[in-house]
Image (cartoon, rainbow, N blue to C red):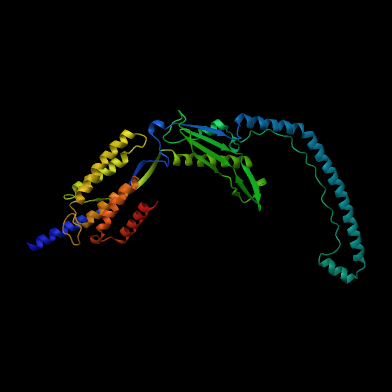
Length: 392
């Protein structure tokens, strides 16, 4: 009888150890540094910049440049002809010099003995008449119109730039949040054969009429290219830098004021065994299923998802009351079960942005660590969780 009971106890203990992990991906609403009431989330954007170019402007300029080149074409041809005549005269002078040099070398060569002349000739060092190549005239090709590559041009105006500012969770139907963005033209600078760039930008944000943000960005020159500025496509580089500025401003505004939907992943452990752990399996289903149901853009569905998730959390908490936190416990709900539940509670609340709740469960876990044997990997994860909780 004793052996049978011992076998049953060992079986239960092994079952409690049968724990696996699942990575759960979900979406969360990331709260900004400056929070506002839902009823006030309206914004307006005003942009001041030197940019006021349309695609038509770029095409018209290309056509105008071609007309200018056509008007100047005769002058370009005459200039090229004059330069060619000068090259011909210079060529005649060089030919005369070559002949004179040859005659002098020949005269000196004749003064040598026959043996000396034969030796020099065998070495290929005898006098040679080298006539410079006669220049060839190439008439400049007449100007041809080429459709400009619009991708290489900054084709925006202030209204277009303003439309590119999107603050998540807000709508452009009011001015509770008033954004004023001033962007200067790109400035290029050469330094030690390299190109640098800046584009001073000022951002002022007023919340309900009160100035909340007044900052300058991109004032310092930053490295752009390892070649001088006359070797870069300035129009394209300006376009790319302006895009960089707008991307930065958008992210800055959303971090400060926007309600962004962000994807997160959390690791949650689960017990595979049936029987004693059916409720824990049910808890896992409640939590993971409702995590995936969170919809940041739909507050009603999100609230329902959190309510469903709480059912799983409540099962975890009630199970903790059954756990025997003592070494060599033969209970189905031993320290290993308590460890996995606490780790889940800490991970979950950290992922949900609730550090204070995560810290509460961390403290409870630490009080029972004397009865829990952590593996090396579990110790490392616990340290990482502690760092995340205490990080400011």
